[in-house]
Length: 270
Image (tube, rainbow, N blue to C red; front, top):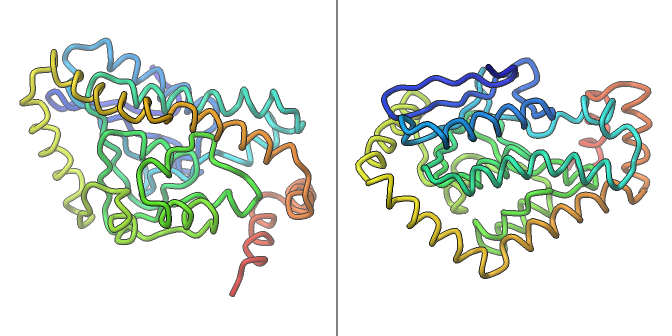
């Protein structure tokens, strides 16, 4: 049914697995759309009581697939192209936010960029000790299009994530309030399953009203406007030339993505 995600149901728990392990489940537009379709299908299926999102192959997701994007959809730095591109991922994050059923992100390994934003849009975030999280696209003079970090953690923590580009360990992410629970690797999915069973004890006719009330509280405080502002910051960052981005794109086109990223990281080496 889907090209880039797998779904499987155990009782009322629907597992959605991001399934592009060769690229650490990085999101191209097809994977964003497949995930959105799977969420829409879950919303319409009364047998699904809880949704859990995980990644295949030891990583949740490395975020946006920049190799695919810069070599295709975003090859020309046009504002509307970047805006349309961001809308696909943001629409999926909003589908998680608005789903009337509980959604749990299940994080192993890398959880970066757009995938980090997706994980925070979920109602609950569980991770094991292998997890590394953050917004490393900041190093490319980029910006997160679904700007949720300031709403999940404190100012100092959000500025660390969004302004330094450093990844944080699972332990630090738990201390920052990004994660609900930190597990040993062998315990992660069992812990998520137990939480899902607890959530299934609630009447589905009313549980979503409480979720909606919590979400609306943030929306009244300006959450939706903040996300929209983040998308525009993403567009502006990508169409505003600067020496780092120019050199990165030249190296990307000449030497490939891995070499270009290695050069970027060398700028921040201590």
